[in-house]
Length: 154
Image (cartoon, rainbow, N blue to C red; front, side, top):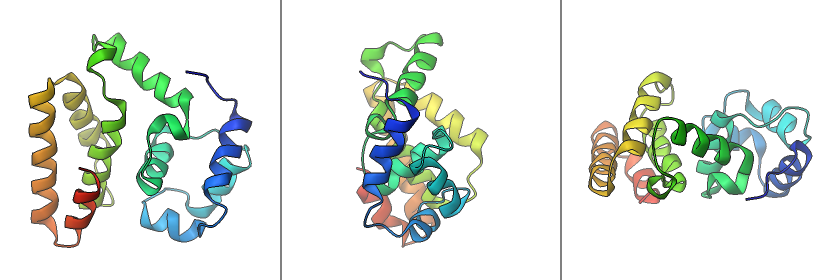
């Protein structure tokens, strides 16, 4: 996987925002910093953080690698350090969980979300399926409007 420069990340992200209202995107996807942080990312003034990248992944329904190969690589390296084999790491599924949990509560507890993602990454396929089912159940119970968001992440 080729790691992009900050400028390359900015160019590719900027292309995604050509026809998107940045303020609405930030608001709808819980992006801290609003349209100002989007501006900083698409102009290369600030590198994309993992939290922002997950909001972009959610909003554009894409994989983390499509937003930032650098961050995707960091996540895989961190997983390897704690003994998760790359063959068991489904990086494209991490934003699914984050998206479901974030939709349940906009001010999600970051520590709880990190623990959930860690548990997901350490699980086998059956465990991952169970965690996704539980996340969807929580989303459905919290509010009917979350139902559509959970279905998007299946």
